Image (cartoon, rainbow, N blue to C red; front, side, top):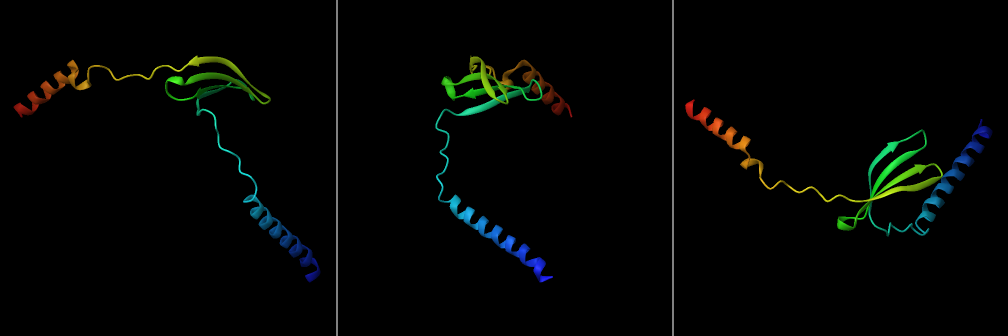
Amino acid sequence: MLQNALPALGLLLIMVVVAIVLKRMRHHLPRVAGQDGPPLRVLSSVSLGPQQRMVTVQVGEGADSICLVLGVAPGAIQTLHTLPMPAPLTAPASSPANSPFAARLAQLTKARHGTS
């Protein structure tokens, strides 16, 4: 019975030693540098087939940002179109509290609470 367990224990000991050595070596290997280019953000992705996709990506931030439309396949990525990013939507000039609906609603609410 001990004859059958010895090879299994030896293999287990070898696997533990290899795991410890690999863990220690990982700290000594050079690290992969972070991304140095402009920030990227995936805006949308559409599947065109089992392995093909069309992806829109924002490159950069602020006024310098552009939108790339990319075709993505297993062996290649191809730029299909380049667009400037649209300007961010601004808030409307009139606030909702000054709209005719809000004024009429406030008037009706005051009237209802005043008569109760």
